[in-house]
Amino acid sequence: MLSEAQQKRVWDGMLGEEIRADYFAELAGIYLWRQRAATWTTLFLASSSVATLLADRVPPEWRLGFAIATTAVSLYSIVMQNQKLSVDAADLHASWNRLSTEYERVWENVYAEDAMSTLTALTERSIELSKSGTLFPNLPKKMLKWQKYVEEQRLSHTAS
Picture 1 (tube, one colour):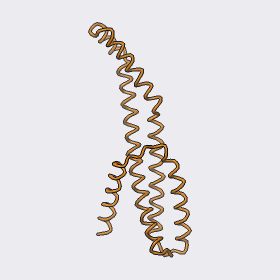
Picture 2: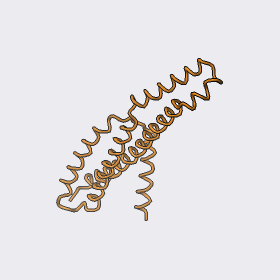
Picture 3: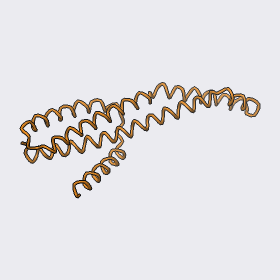
Picture 4: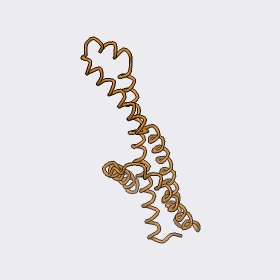
């Protein structure tokens, strides 16, 4: 059986992990969009049809600008690794979501004999999982958006 303070930890863990899961799902989408935009921009700028269209109508310095822009977007794609970041953020989303679900199971059975050991294990997993998220930016506005969303969802379900 969990004490009142431990039950609060379970509730906070359940909400916190759900917030993180939603945050990383959004980040995964952002990085995937950035990668797609960079890929399509590179393809467009590098296409021979664009070069052919511009050859007679654009001054040479503009053609050089397109070549530089193509190189810059290609370098951005390589350096930023948006595809990898998207996959990593999606993995973190799934892991945080799984952890939130496990906290919810404890919440639904706070009187179980193994509740304290389960809570301790979940806390340790949360700490370990937090290490993986350090590669990503801290975007407080996005995190707050998901916090408000999750709290509204949970409060509407508890009021029913």
